[in-house]
Length: 462
Image 1 (cartoon, rainbow, N blue to C red):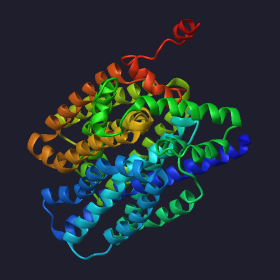
Image 2 (cartoon, one colour):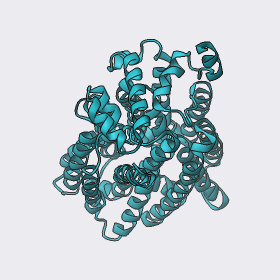
Image 3 (cartoon, helix red, strand yellow):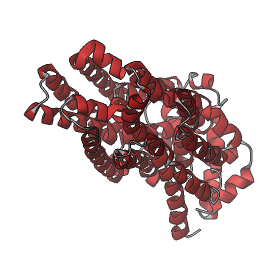
């Protein structure tokens, strides 16, 4: 296959992932504006606001938990088709005004679909493109997610005059139909075909992008990787040599969310109203500015991740979050959100979101798709993202209550401590997989969490 054809296929894979990320991000952003009007219509308490917001997250926890089995059983491509159809149905249903209970149930079912999405889509991308662009292609998914949040904020702003929260929630369903058209053009991944013993189909897919010698060599590499991976369930993740990989994946998944990003994503307009923004429309507009800044730094991460590596980008982003936490701790300690203090509060929220988007936001999906070898990859990604969603649920359920109980100082002190823990955790455990074939990752964990010395291996072979 020519390089032009290969680039075209990679572009379709990237576009598919981007649109899936876009609709996932749209839903996250849409609820932050919609909740301002839902709470007024249904006279919601703080607890009920958290319940409506977190219903989708409860579904995501369950969806991510079973996503690995589903992606392994039916394939990455069919899983994405199921996701697209489910998103259309439940996004539209969320916008049908049949009462609060209906809304909560539809949000929960939509969450199930999104839970499948956050596991299956990065897997599909990572297993469909070469290592030289894998980091950037997976970041495209996160970049699209962040863009989707921004689009949602613009939609929220557009519907603010009519207070039409139903439209805010439902309009994204159209994008899922585009995904269906794109996915039907693509084969499943060679790694999934090999897991199912369908060698000829795997080889046929590889021949579309590589010459015969390279395709045969990759098939042999896949066979070797699968022969050493053993079983594919959750228990296998905690058996040697992958115990350290499991600790890293689960810890990273939890820290990505528990450090507080979705407090801003879900409640940004509400938070900005608390620190000086008077109107709902003004708070949503401030949220748009924050989200645009987050997209800008993700573009930087996209441009450098496959050149400078995963670790520097991830650690740099977490360091910015630590600085933002210190700034926000200071402004909440002052407590007078006018003038320069209000401006510093806005700056702190923007820096926090930028740091997250540059580091955790861009690299979380990359590590979810790169940490484990082929047979464990879906289960490992599902476990990591289940922990991610559990932490997300904690934030969605308790952030507003935490601020009321602990105050801004107590809440942001806690988030500062968690960000410092995250920095140390990543510094100690995160592998650097820049430019590595996915099949090489097994050797990293076989070697106790260090990349083998290739020169030593070659000398031993001679």
